[in-house]
Length: 191
Image (cartoon, rainbow, N blue to C red; front, side):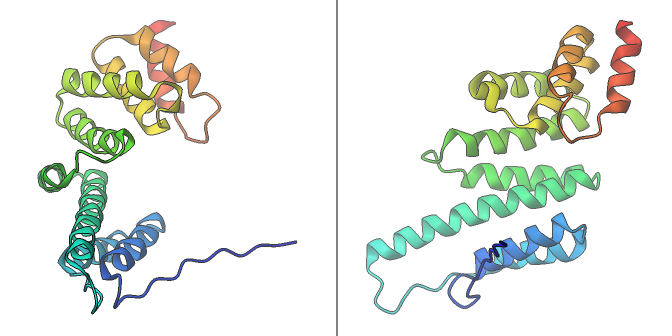
């Protein structure tokens, strides 16, 4: 028995979410330029309030739009990091940081910090990246993302903590990510 799942969005009612989700799907499919265009369209879009919206409804809508913009800036930063456009990534991370609501779950804050740590690592600021990633791992523990753990292993290795990197890579041994090159480098230093 098969099940089909689908997402349906109304571009007139939810233009930010519609453009964001389509951009996200295209980015996952490798269509980065088109994804970037849709993310930019998401940032430019204004979600219209319902005709009978109260002041409270409008305030909630603004907050929801800010969260959408925050997510969109993070995805634009990720695309920029993936294509070595570090200045663009920094701008999007700064824009996202301004929008990051204090009330969001700690997981969202960690998503922001993960992007900032990745930027620091790519810019050669290994100690800052290591400290940020260590804080995320300390907060999240076993629930830390694979990306967080992998970046932490890289930061550990680059700062000379080869044993730490090797132990983290052992934990990542069963994940579906190709880390063979990094493992060979680290094992070459330890063995």
